[in-house]
Length: 319
Ligand code: TXA
Ligand code: MG
Image 1 (cartoon, protein in one colour):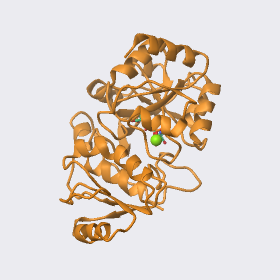
Image 2: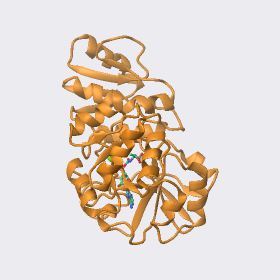
Image 3: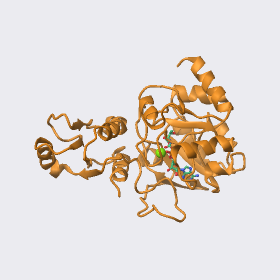
């Protein structure tokens, strides 16, 4: 990355402006986390409800510790093992970060991203940055600079760091004293977390959309969704779905299992990491095709990041 582009981005951020930046998971929409007006612009541009708090990106453990009122041993262990990386920790906050970032709540989410451009930006800026995924609220996350431009046009500067390596959002873990709970499954798996600390597995909260307090307000049932109606199918329906393509139904099909070629079939990798990496690009492509519906095969493989992938697919097809 051109050091001048980083410098220019830092100038924009210092003035309270927004800069989209690449991370290893998805692109983030960055703003100075200590500047309430800058953060308000992020909510406005994304169309994000004010009750959904933002993740604060930090350069390292020290910067994270400056934002919290407690740093339990579990936080230390998890951060040491997984940072920089796709793990977000939710902890009791102090008052360094303005209320708007945390949606007025008592906790702050912190994450140290593992991407050379994100790290260079955080180093050069010298202070934490909010970074929700760089897409309209509820829409499909961005894994390329083009996706970001498609969402926001030229209203934000975009640092282009190429396609995101991991492809789906960080795992979010809430830490309360000795207790740790997964709020959002991601590319760091429960199994990996459990090697380091006692972490409770993810329990999907049914019907978490709607009013009232939510464990993680961002975990609305419908999320990560294309604008085209999206439905899921399973392996037993492969033939029937492919037949519908061949009879000319205006569909786009996303599948890792259908072993055939068709212009409206987006074939996905069969390994979880590869699938995750390509998922959002496939959804963007499918959405752009102007079809009547998008049909996605729900993978049924166990473990690894498959369950995080299923979580995103179910949300994409919810409602
Ligand atoms: O991988 C990622 O985490 C990406 C990259 C850019 O870092 N960011 C991201 O941000 O996915 P966003 O805003 O799209 O999702 C943040 C999630 C939301 O579900 C939000 O509700 C939750 O984290 N969250 C943020 N602060 C929280 C808090 N204090 N307590 C509970 N959940 C929180
Ligand atoms: Mg998001």
